[in-house]
Length: 122
Image (cartoon, rainbow, N blue to C red; front, side):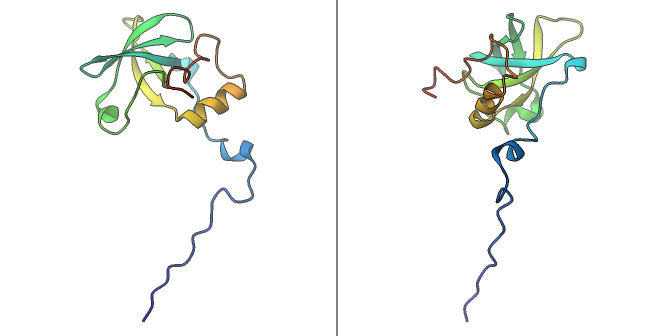
């Protein structure tokens, strides 16, 4: 007796590239979030990132992202600035390379963060 699985429908079938990337998360400006590029891994779950306002900040990777999301150098991320110490921030999101290039093509990135994947050979 042979068991066959039903083929799953492709959720992206028939959609244009605009519709596939329609749900990319953007920073909430009112809450102090902004784009940044990971410049250096510092250890103990901290990174140095260059934010879109041109300032390099020490960013902390929170516990819920620590083991689930791996951040490497030159990754495009979203950081949330601390209210009481604006030279530090928390990482809230990491973009995949294809998502980052889509944001770059749509001109949603500032000049300070447009060079996010160049050192890795992308």
